[in-house]
Length: 385
Ligand SMILES: O=C(O)CCC(=O)C(=O)O
Image (tube, rainbow, N blue to C red; front, top):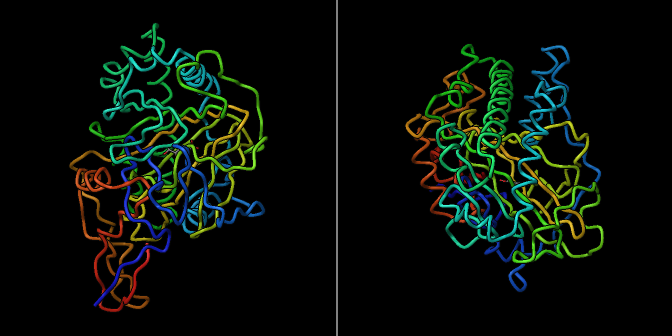
């Protein structure tokens, strides 16, 4: 009899991919809820001295392939620099985001509730997760963007252009990285992963997250957006307030850009959190998602991460989630499966993105969902996700 366990967290399921913002706040072993504010558990270990990989995409290709594969296997996370996304495209999107979040709360509410697209505040997803965050969730498809943007900006054309241009640029970056990954894994069809998010019906998303400083209250919030930089995560506070609770991303690949305020942390192993420095500010953070873990037969690790609130500086992040089309069949290429020694059988049963998304939505943000798609193996007694 085989038992499946989660080595990442004793909690079990989440609903994070679309409205993603949920957190495992229900999980008392990892966090505590205090008067509506979720705090990190005191027992957690923050490890400042782990050097997270920063990959220069302009280096020689064979070197880049190796670095990407290594980082995806070890951390499921890396940063990229010299990525080719023009600074003005990023800046325009950032300006639009700041402009939206600095509006009075009542105006922002007109773009909500996030069901699943639109403006959300504190509530993340549909299963009771919450955090110190407000966000705007958009489908990455231009038609959907134009429909959702009606209540978001007074200058619709400007907003749509900024979003479309940004989405296009980060999608290209995601595709380039996915192609490098396929090459690094010696898969002959190097577009096998990237084609999933290039698909016209791709279910990719853009989420803009805004983590106000702790003095913020929604109804007073119309002038508090603070663009000053600060790299210390909790400059005035010994508390560790959670903005966006821990989770893995269900999609294929996530490309995140934040302002220069710290707060993002990744968990390469249960109970251990590594702060991701916001520098260099021209970098993007790249996360392996659950679907890519399944597509690589478990070689790449979908990384658990969360965002902490800074007590005196406002943090903002812009997150592109590259996803397949709902009907896409997720099954790892045969090159990553071996029946001879070293034995590497299929780890996951094939599933469609629609199926995985449904499973994700029905759970809490911090839950480990991929384990439910894992195939039982005669040799495995306990399988960890
Ligand atoms: O804001 C961040 O740094 C993390 C956000 C995140 O994990 C998400 O939106 O899924």
